[in-house]
Length: 184
Image (cartoon, rainbow, N blue to C red; front, side, top):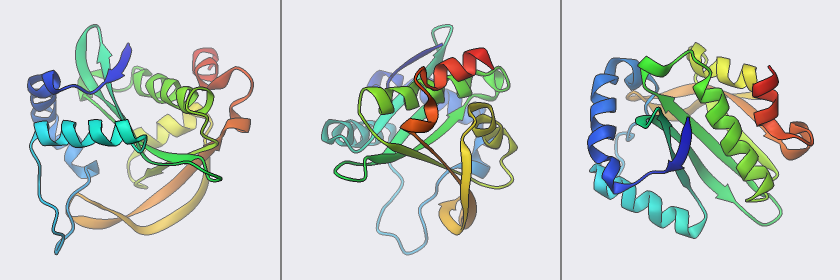
């Protein structure tokens, strides 16, 4: 497994993966709320926006590769500095690679990077209560549930409730979350 930045050259593989997994991913995908002035974007516009945000330090989009193949993403959003030093993380994987421990390891790598390199203090993950696969990821990582957020995000065409999870750098231990996954 390899994590790397999202690139414009990922367009074909990203589109094919998203199309092949539409039924698997749509129930969990963010959507544009009614009345919003935002509109759906092309992959090129998406990558350019994410790269611009990455240069500003507010977003980090990572590709998950498995055996050299595009397999999914882990995206760090809403990075806040100053006295807060936190961010939120979202992720998705091609169904062909699900259930193999790839996402927990990818998320652990990203979180360790955020804590030890970017020097964040806290990272949050919001998960729809019925998304058992994503809930298994935070369980494997030992990330604690901190609350429940009614109508938290616009997902699959509706405002959806989410369970909120968070981890701080102190909770990762001196060896980080990757060690936790590999030893688990």
